[in-house]
Structure formats: structure tokens, C-alpha cells
Image 1 (cartoon, one colour):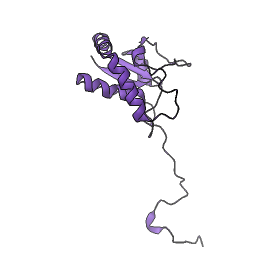
Image 2 (image 1 turned 135 degrees about the horizontal axis):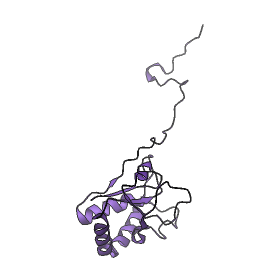
Image 3 (image 1 turned 180 degrees about the horizontal axis):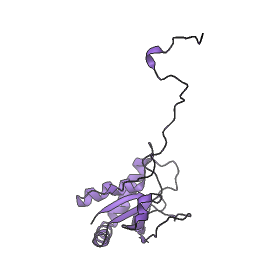
Image 4 (image 1 turned 120 degrees about the vertical axis):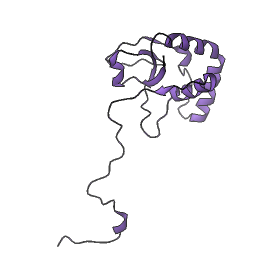
Length: 152
């Protein structure tokens, strides 16, 4: 069986085919449309975001140190859980948006380094996040910039 990561609002989770495991510090306060099957506190980033200005590098260093301290428990527990049915480890961030990142990505890298197995992000069939829109009234043709035209 496989282990995936995703965000709580991924509609693919409504299929019921996955074990859904919360790895966020807080619980969603909205109706998910599926049942959470459990939580895994060893993967929750308790206290690591207390400093709102923490860099991804510093967060990753601290989080990996915490994971290393519990490596045997984490690896053995997830292997046992995934033997029954595919698991999806869940938190909030939509990492499809440029510039967004999440502790689940750091965990997936750590898992690969420690087990040699990949954890992929579960495909999210919802609409892609909106990128910056460009007004249809502004020409994007760089060949004609600086050239003034007349309507008459």
C-alpha cells in the first residue's frame, strides 16, 4: 500500500478509499465531507511556527531533528498503518500555489531519506489555484510596446 500527503480540502478524499490521518496541529473547523480516521502527533509541527518569521530552512532543520528523535516509532507505525489501506497525511496548505510550502513536504523528503520510498502528493482534482490575472485590455505583445496607435 502507499502513503500520500494532501490538504484537507482535496475532494478526492471523499471517495472513502484512503485512510485519512491528520498531521496538522489544529483540526479543520468546516465540514470535510469525509471522516478523519485518526491523527499522528509525531508528525505535527507543535511549536515550530511560534516564530512567524521562521525560514523554511530553519523550520526544516528543527522539524527533521524532531523526526529523527522518533524515527523508529514513525517508520514502524506508518508501515503498519499502510499495510491495511493507502494513507493520506493531511494538513491545510495548498502547495499547488507558487511560494506555498508545508511541513508535509519536509516529512516526505525525510521519509525518502530514511526508507528509500517516495511519498507523493495525492492528485487534487479541484481547480488549480488562480494565478495573477492579466487584464485582457493590456497588450502582452512586447514587439509593439512604445508604439502608439489610433482608433481613428
